Image (cartoon, rainbow over all chains, first blue to last red; front, side, top):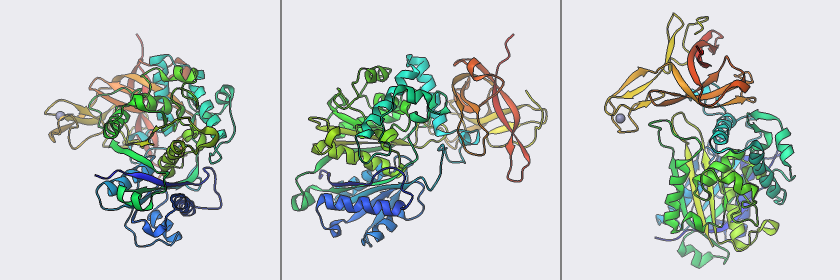
Length: 380
Length: 138
Ligand SMILES: [Zn+2]
């Protein structure tokens, strides 16, 4: 079976884009990825486009915008994992031998769709009693504090770290460093979480061009990064109440990816993880097996997760700092991985990085641990 | 339990309410392996049996975790307390919490199901839903 290689990447600035829409942003990311790959856009054989609230056939609108009609194209919705799922689908088209050059795009114009707290679908019994996504993560934070003794101040160090990284990232939504006091004094959203603990409402798009071994020989540009694994799982139904401070879904998705890539968590040099909320970063990295359960807040305190630390987490700024345009998020994580692994990350460069992991996890449905989880492993 | 305003259940498939102001959350019990689920399912996630019966859950459980929601959608007036309660059948159910100040709540405290007015239908008619309240001591 062929390997899959990321040959070109593109990404718009993440933030508020009042003068454009999900189509414009997707087209801009696509054109940058094509230019980065240095290929003729007519080489692209199929497209997968992830988005959540952008309506029907947004993918077709994007490709029409850039003059590419007629391709097989699938629009992909998997909540916050939509963009990452698009990458997985694109990689499967290549591994199956169906295509040699495929584009995956993630896009979202979220500021025009809603403001405030994201909630589960209204049909869900938990939505009917007032569940919000910040509320659910706040409950997980409360439980984690109870079980492991994490303090509110320790939790604040995660947004401080991620917004510090974002301040160094010209494409990030937030470009200002913050302090622990800023976090603790920001508006209460769902106790104990405050505004700085939450990812913002962001517009943005990202795109990646994937190639097979065959296409690489003809069109590769010498800067490709191998997509060693791209895995996807849905949450299992709870047969009995399970811990909300540990994520079997994240671990099972990661384990399959580690096995496919022939590595273990101890081999990972850095990761972009789904920090939709500060507590989520804790749960993700422990679920991925990168840090032991109940240990991450103390590791952050020691600086282990900083750029330059033992295992940098979210060097791009993460969802909290870079922003979280739902469909765009998973693709933008892979853009960051590629730039880090190529050595093109500028002041945020992680020296000697060889293996990076991207993790997304999205959606909430009653009685299951989580809806859609993805893990991508990129190897230089 | 409060009996005022007891009428139409806000989610009849998930909450049964009776004229006397009592009620129960509803779910499935697998006749093959005994597992319980909330809400009602078509098949058992434990053994995939489709031989399920709809059952009414106990009205007392233990608080697993909670939060005070201070930003929500317009349908819900903030702030409100939200929590997960573990019931003896082996199901964890989310609900709003009433009858206690946030500062007095502790994880692990016993909670009871309370049938109460809860929102309105599309025509503005009052509906009956549920909240969790701390179990009265002594
Ligand atoms: Zn069963």
